[in-house]
Image 1: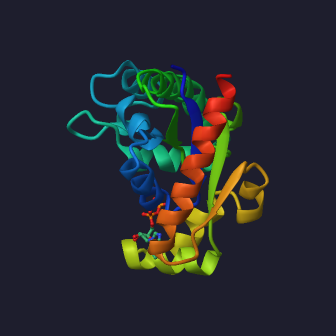
Image 2: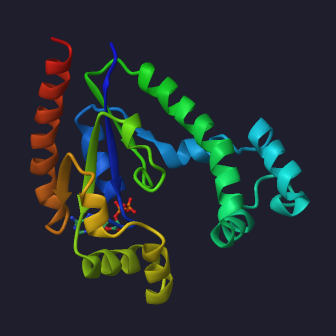
Length: 203
Ligand code: ADP
């Protein structure tokens, strides 16, 4: 079977992990794009070799693993280098996502992609599910979860799309401003919709 691909996205601290757990509980496979993005630059991977050839040894930690904060700093201040890194890594990440999707024998799968829209991957998924909540609540939950200070959180949020920009691309939206207990019902409703959509596709 060729599962329907639901791309789940939302800002930092919007509740992606929490909501993915709910889908998982219903038996839906959840593929984590961030996890895959780390795998493709793990020690010994050809892409890590390419990065160290391009940026020099300062991109590596002493143990030969990728120095993520160094890479983040470089691509934050230089658009051209960001483009280089994306051109190198995005096809590898997409290929791995595809392989994992194809190995799933379910009507649909969730692919959690925090930067789905920022990366321009709208066409890579069949449905875009956006997790939405007011920014004040997002900041409050993030502070409680991570202990990050207000300024750092605002800087991260400023580098991501705004609520309204993200919502423009949504096929479905989860309003995660309520209690966690409400999520069960919301997710279970969406689950049925995605099952129906998948069935319609195969008719
Ligand atoms: P993301 O994966 O998008 O960064 P998380 O799922 O980790 O976000 O959620 C951020 C924080 O908010 C976590 O501490 C989580 O437990 C909490 N959280 C998520 N959804 C809710 C909710 N509906 N009510 C209260 N807290 C929530």
